[in-house]
Image 1 (cartoon, rainbow, N blue to C red):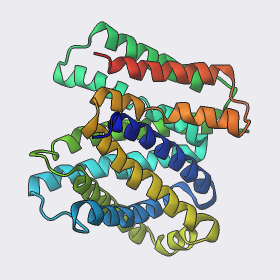
Image 2: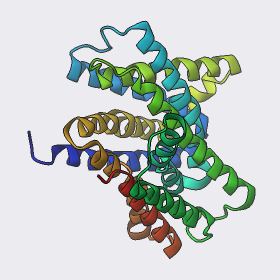
Image 3: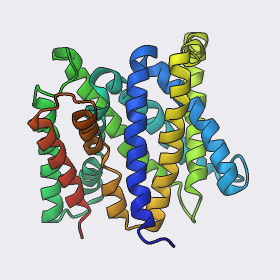
Image 4: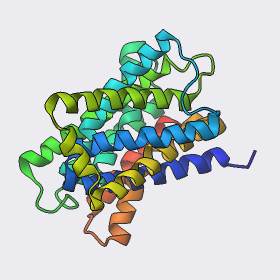
Amino acid sequence: MIPLFGEAAAFTAALCWATSSMIFSNIGGKAGAQTVNRGRLACSIFCLTVLHFLLEGSPWPAAVSWEQLGWLSLSSIVGLVIGDAMLFQAFVLIGARLSMLLMSTVPIMGAVLAWLLFDETLRPIEIAGIAFGVSGVLIVILGKKGRPVGLGGRNYVLGVLFGLGGAIGQVANLITAKYALIDGYSALSATWIRTLVAVIVMWGIAILLGRVRRTVTACIAPDVGKWLLLGALIGPAIGGWLSMAAVQNANVGIASTLMALPPVLLIVYEGLVMRKPVGWQAVAGTCLAFAGVALLFMH
């Protein structure tokens, strides 16, 4: 095994997710958040089918129990359907960086939920991590500098609420998916099933609302289609596969911390590459939030 392979996979997964979030945020403003979400799911199932064939030897999972299918379906609905619908709306309203910062609260929410529901004991260092994480996020979202240009008031609050809704959906998604990954069941197969369920639900809703033609037309537009496919390949397919490789080959805490890096990477990109006025509050708050996530996984 290559030294630090798991850690490298986790960091690369974070790069993939940061990149795909920027792509989806940009095209979401052109085609609409839910249109992009439906298109992304369709592209994702195509990419995952190819990946499943290359890594597992067949285009789709060979077998799954009814219990596993039930948990994976529930995981898909709360995470990929409801949670991601909120996240994509946040992308459009407040941009990729702030949205991904709110998504970085997933480990914090998970720790608090485990304490509330499962009576898991929180050590002092974990309590400090939660406090750091929440404080960092509050510093960023309450600061005015670094917000998308012209955004404020009701739309900003809605964007933050949608981002937090996306994070809550991801926490519920992880908890429900855990029950399906029993007896060494392939995480890639589980991802394929969850994505297929989301495709069926989201496109079923589009059929009922009469939005299929409009969605397809928007998704195949020259300035949207190629970016949609690229984002789906980089994020859900390659990023998802690398995240599984990271968990399999590195300490879960280290891998999870590295995979919480997207908001830090995005603030570096916006400040140094795009030359956008980010503001010291956003930098300090983002670093504090990441430090909080890191503390949660220290042993």
